[in-house]
Length: 360
Image (cartoon, rainbow, N blue to C red; front, side, top):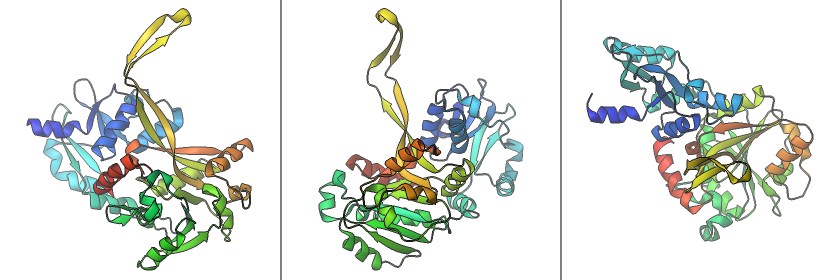
């Protein structure tokens, strides 16, 4: 196999002894949401998708387990002499990719479905048409000053499109038709911009007279909801399957589900693991600490909104904590680090633009 072909394949192949967190990082980098896992002799062991990783995390939470524990071992594949059946198999089995194997069951090629076809395949039976979407767009965006001295944060462009419009367009791809925007800072500018746009969805404005936090303004909404509601900040994009998030929330019987992203923090030093009396038992050179962080996107059962105090500063994290104190279920829906795009910091804006050009 030519070196350039092997180098291309390496992005989608990993040995079965790497950890879950290492596999997540590799899936992030290849942007195809899949990794093919191989045995020591190079033969195919199975496949790992972001969904497989998510199920593993929710069931065990162990990010340092070997990837083989979470691998799907009945992976569809074809041998070289059968490669002409690839399109038929992808169409009939709704597959995004198929590995082509040689006589020793080693991967020599991976065929991918065209991205546009994949998007249609994923979205064909997905719908948020009856799901209310609440977007918190009232903050001052102090982290992005001085940009926000001129424009409200929701209208700061990522590429050529304001971040808020990108968020709504993404939900609309899953069928969302109605949005509630809680507005305060420079609200007339936000309303004026969207009045001039020809949008395929409806916007209902919820106007604060004073800052009420990320949850307090929800009590200003007059409508009574009868199904789970998505609540999200106005400065993030989540590159995930929104229909799956809703289904997970319902299946887990959560009151609130927090969409959470893996974040890796490298330690630029050797770390000592010590026992009693200062005896060193291990030295870990430049390890990574991994945590799941709150992205600012939630699925909330409507009865939880009754806990929000009227006309008071109150945040979504307050609501989650109060629900847990009262015995309610607060769960999480984990996504990878690259699936969480945050515009809240200057250094993140360029990464968001680059990622949007790749996947959105």
